[in-house]
Image 1 (tube, rainbow over the protein chains, first blue to last red):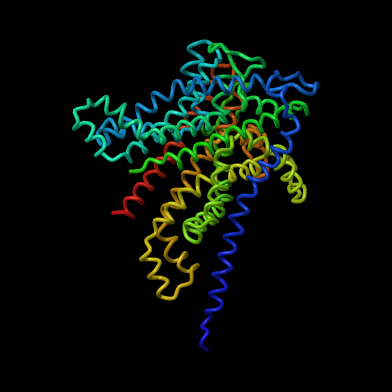
Image 2: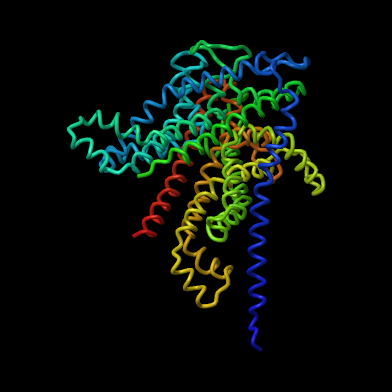
Length: 282
Length: 248
């Protein structure tokens, strides 16, 4: 007997490999199902009026999601305004001062903040802003979303700036350039692609966030530009209309879903291109 | 409040025990569904297909779902998964709600696969070639190398990946809220409707007019925060230990 069960072992090996392949591709099926469903149901409600009109009351077909689109853009604007300067500053600090008591605690806080469920962040923004200012508002929604964006931007900035060789910084300092100028003219421009990627991913993430907006931005059937008044957003609109019993509203929600998925996936794709094209390399 | 089992805003009873049970049930069931898939994907990407075209394609297909907003998962689940589960339930002769813990876990597991897999891939890639080659030279087949060398070596990283996915699953709100059926009682089976800590907050927060109701919801939020924080911390500590062990 020469075989010693070798052919059985090889058979087991192949069986294992192909079952891995099968299971892995099974895991990608839901993705296609989601994209197919959203596209199939959403494409029919897509038209020019869909993105330029307000929703109609239940029972009437047609109408659009203008309030959601404007709301989402405003929320992204406010949260970027609040989180980008803070995020880049913190990331810069953490990459410049890697050791030390304060850095350790900042890093720990950012880690905790990153792992915090978004619904809890909504509660925090509610307690900070909504109660203090006496009502649901665009501003409180922006604060909630910025709390989600800050850790992402900090991480991206820190990771990128860490890759920049210290020789670059030292060369600049050796030429007599001041420290602040070195940071603004040498360090940040060299790491710009990583920072931009972090911001894009942050925007893509908060564009789809619903839970923290439910009790901060709250939703609004009309277009609103006032930061002290409630606004709608695409995810809130999808949630409210999807849970409603009216088929016309379901149709609006499918259209809004297609719109949102397209934007979010585009942002993700752009950030991948940015990473690949402008990769920080020395 | 965390061990009392009646939650009734009308009579002013706020016991969060049903939601703690609901959260743990959904999260662990989702982990049980997602682990085999995540492990298979990470073995393919980290070991079998490392650096091939196929691995790039699969990698992209795994990463895209992480970008899809959770409300879309919920909406899709409500209109596709819920009817499927309903027909499954009537075949199994349990009450065909469609919505419930089981449905929520299925959707959650789809959502957390990317998070679990990405960390597992990294740790499986860290397994030193020397060890694998030593096993091959002794005549081991690939599956034997994976079982006896790769998995034992990457064990703690795989565990950390599962923990981080758990942290994600515990806090996931919208998709769960839309398909879990919103029942404020302790679930009797895995097909029963329930509520998780996150979904009860999302459902009742804006309607809470009684200050005690609002405070109770915020307390549920505090518990959720500490739970996810502890799980994430343990996960990150394991990662740090694994990475420094592999290089040091």
